[in-house]
Amino acid sequence: GAVVSQHPSWVICKSGTSVKIECRSLDFQATTMFWYRQFPKQSLMLMATSNEGSKATYEQGVEKDKFLINHASLTLSTLTVTSAHPEDSSFYICSARLEGAYGYTFGSGTRLTVV
Amino acid sequence: DAKTTQPTSMDCAEGRAANLPCNHSTISGNEYVYWYRQIHSQGPQYIIHGLKNNETNEMASLIITEDRKSSTLILPHATLRDTAVYYCIVRVATSYNTDKLIFGTGTRLQVFP
Image (cartoon, rainbow over all chains, first blue to last red; front, side, top):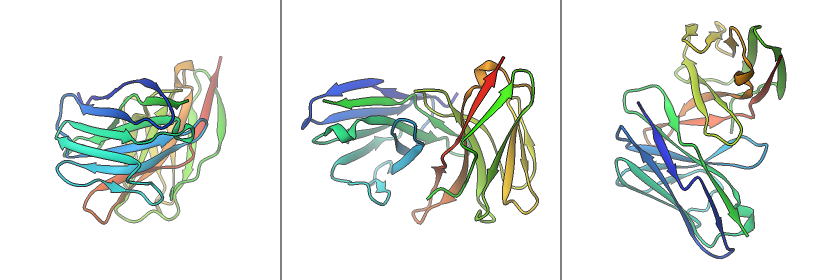
């Protein structure tokens, strides 16, 4: 149980375009999901906490107008990288916590390459 | 900011126990310690977590010092498939009524034959 699915697993886009990444909890409802970014050979950096039905909470230094987060249902959160630039190329990973459980389940990640 | 410090890398012989240390000297009384591991280009995998007491599950054991300022993850019989980056994480509360995991830099464990 407690599976989190991310789509797409990889994407290449042109500089200046926007890219949407989906994060779904397949067998449970998640009122809270988390978005992380990971650069090569570095740790995961928390970008924002996505709350169902309300605005996301962004970590310090993360541009909320560039990384749009929508958590419209209890099983889906989306991250849109707007006006992508090569420096946005990274591994984006989402996570969700099963209510009442202790573990945070992570998706398999999305590798974004901006050319 | 991460509340944990770990060695950058460690080696372990296959079949031997791997002991991965973690310092979290600023941990608060109600903050849990979590361990995850990440194999290259995959999402992190949950291993174990604890608050005060030592914990054991089918994957590993977690030893937390009495003052809670450090802990050790033990993989009792390491295999080649245990080669990964291991993250020691403190789960912190937020001002908006939820918790979040803040990752440290992790330990790259290399298990060799």
